[in-house]
Image (tube, rainbow, N blue to C red; front, side, top):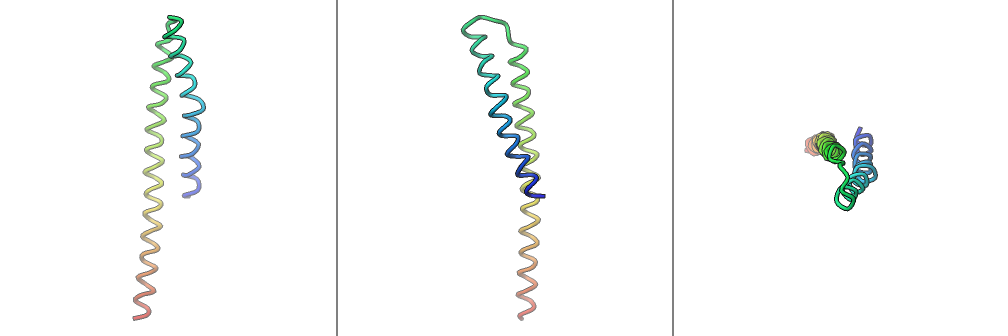
Length: 86
């Protein structure tokens, strides 16, 4: 489970960097230097980046929940071993 959420997290970051940032950069250059109207596409990129940040937040929360569960299981196992020795 943790491996899959790590993959989702890495995939989202790589997709964000390799797709949305270059398109946004190109559109900003076209808009600024060539006075072309690309505002709809700029808004699309900004919204896509907002959705990417939201998705990264959800995946990060899921990863922290999985890690928290693993820590709780390990602490319970350590407590069981300690109580068995006593």
